[in-house]
Length: 295
Image (cartoon, rainbow, N blue to C red; front, side, top):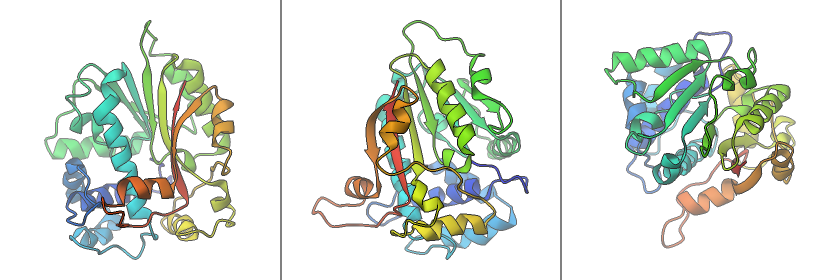
């Protein structure tokens, strides 16, 4: 998760944790997720920003006015999409690299599936230290196969870090970049994907979400796009990287990656916010999409 350089915490990381906590307690069809760790962490968040959001953890359709339309639904869909992948496939990867981890809890929640995998969480040193402290306060032990890698992607090249992890024959890796690349300069994003492409053995996979580039220019006026861009700016965080619509495969191919799955708002609504009778349960913000690719 992006780090707010003007503070000792990331507002967006804390907000995502709080919204995941709210989702865990949801009774509405389609809205519940299983991130109980976020619920525990949310109670320990004490920044002024997080304290102003906590009243909206109550069950029901109550959200902070700061939450742009459809953003909560997108976050829920993204969490479910990645959780389902971990549930079914995480055990297939020797190493899992979670870049911009924020308060990600999958290494804890999916311990059974990850017993044979090494998990590396990369995040800004201050944000990562804050997370570790919260887990310690809650007496949540660090899984033995988890290693924290304090990293500022704007200051250190990922390729240099990955050299510390030699590849072994027959292994493949998973890279998870959730809520990350939209906060980074284009050159940094290019550097990260180049590093992954150069390091990852054939068969390795990457899951990330991204913003459409026309959201950054204000030309995208579809559901919730302007609101989410401006909303982040109001809390001191900024989206600065996007991928042009219809150009995802071009971006991936330039880094020797092949698209396996692309989930825009419509596809995510169909999968996670439509019931068996075909009734829509919620509407997603259209500024973002999820991509899943293979080396």
